[in-house]
Image (tube, rainbow over the protein chains, first blue to last red):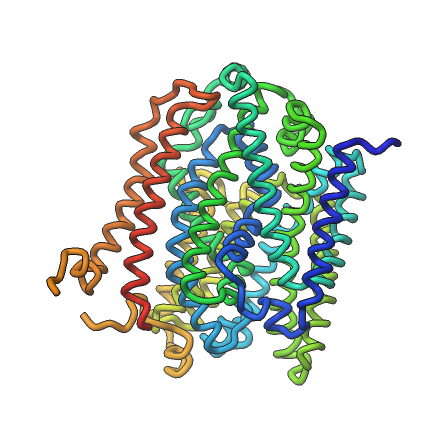
Length: 492
Length: 79
């Protein structure tokens, strides 16, 4: 089979990404602080772009387009609103966690929970619950990668997923956190530039209005603010936005990035840089999705609409770059998730319970082994294909939102307790899982027009506060050491 | 030196009220524009007018968020 231009561009791009990892490996010291956090010295540009790349993933490149091609532009409304609120979280809890993490050498969110609440077991509970959502997120990324490789090269879906998993395992093993964030920065830039180019091309060179009118005729109401099924009411949009506004800054891999910032100002600035990059990319994915309906009214799979649209409209070189950029971004997101999860397992389970005398090198080795096992689990879930890319990653994001109360409130509130944290980590995620439409144990009517993730967040936070008020706080030492006043120490 | 209104805004407790007001304004803008723009359906460059206007609203929200974050960092930087 002759190699097409798009395929040649695709493989060249992936090879260049791999070289970044090999180059980063020269600086990696294989100590926990360096392997997980690049020695806490990450600057604004790289931190902002790696945050962006962590969020810009299969969800953004394929999932949003797939969703907007069916339900209208509502996903952009809530994601853009959420992005503004991300900045507030980065500047408040992000900075607070950066300070506490740096001062007390904290590397993972589970470790923070463990020391804040004086409970190694609570760290394990956090890890177990976030692990469910991390696996969903990893599976969503691999699904996206499978779509890209299938659409571009015709590699069967299963083989494509296995190939991506192999690439990720090798990449993390070699490069660690430094390689992941460097390649993230490249991915964000490339993806931003190429998607902007595609959108500008459709707007300026093609008759975008005619394409949009065709889409509107195909699905009446597609371009209305509430969408064709009147789903995107202000209440639904706001509750989805608030769930995401808590969820994205509350990803364990985002929290790990708070610990890696060079200083507090870098943390604040990178939050803005991240949001300012994220909004246009959300926009590009959303508009390409609705336009796709005017060009490809009946795609074989909704998740394929953006690859098919780009392939139909653009030069093969552009198509190759979009697909390679998307695949690389997907893998870098998945890398981040896998690295964070495995670092929590090795630091908060292996070193805490299995081998307390482990050397730094042994801890990193354990992480590398756990990355492998986690990716194998994620591959298994991907091959089952429990849901499409958008619903699967949406589920992961709102799930993470329900795990944030012990951290986001624990950072500021000295009344926060271990019992409150435990109850919150059980009931919030539990309700979210039962509300997940693909499972549907709790009927959608009980969300009263709100996004199901927001209900989970409400349950998680209210349970946390209520149970904390009824139970005993941890020792004063850990509270004062691992919490700080929201408004600072200045007197009135 | 004479204290300006901007200096006073940066002092507690006023700064806290200003920050809370800004966050409230962000929520009001985020929810309110969806009611106001619902009928803006004319297409420009292949996209409905409400979407272009929404981009403007998001831009304004970013500015407000920037002001809130700047004030917040001023009041907490001594911690």
